Length: 199
Image (cartoon, rainbow, N blue to C red; front, side, top):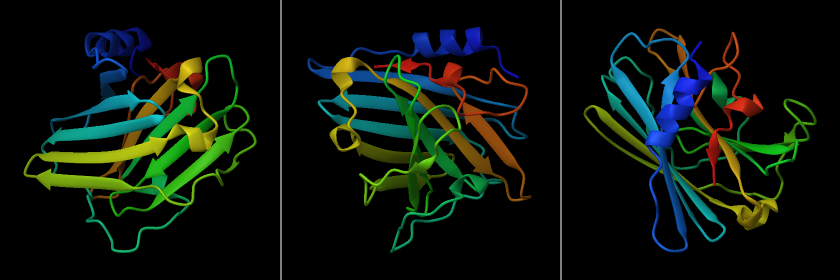
């Protein structure tokens, strides 16, 4: 389990100012348990108006990971978290509800709304598609998604709290769990104390 204070200090150290009218943040994700090979994962966020772009950057020794190629017909799918999957959680300060987004390298995606942590789960019907892109070279994988917050009835003027996480599947079938913080005895991306990024 990773100390939330450590995670917070890493996040604050990586906070960067953006251009006028733009908020930009960068934060390191932490593994729940040390991976068998050296690698790092960080997230870069850019909020401009109602458009939030998130870029995940995975670097290091990646040969033991399952990193599939993009497919021609991406679609909405449940259960993406069972394999390599990038995730984002968005909430408004003071609200118990939040949104969860799951994105796979193949281009498949899922979006859910919750009334409270793990309660009232339902598909977010305001979205009918979610566009993602990724590129890779040896030792580097970049994955990008853009979210139109006005479709989700989220107003950035009220502030946003975000949890950024990822699941990386290894070739042997085991999985790594990465997040801004791991305050629980087991990985739990829905824990609101993991929503450390503020916009």
